[in-house]
Length: 75
Image (tube, rainbow, N blue to C red):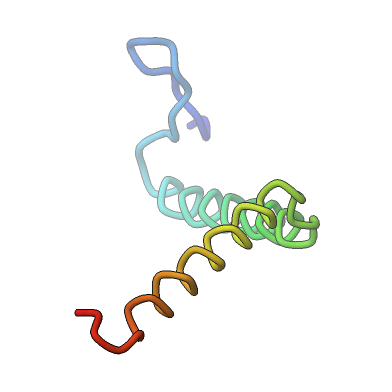
């Protein structure tokens, strides 16, 4: 029995059978580890200045709107 079979469209898929569950668990662990690694790398990168500028603009706009709403006589 092989660990992988080809599907009708030529894609590779795990073989059916007893080793399938074991293989699925190994693949899940490998995929999870890779995703965590990519996420950790992404989180370690600095935030681009353009994004920081946009966030600052949004904060300023929200503060301005809040101050306007807090003025006496404003609904």
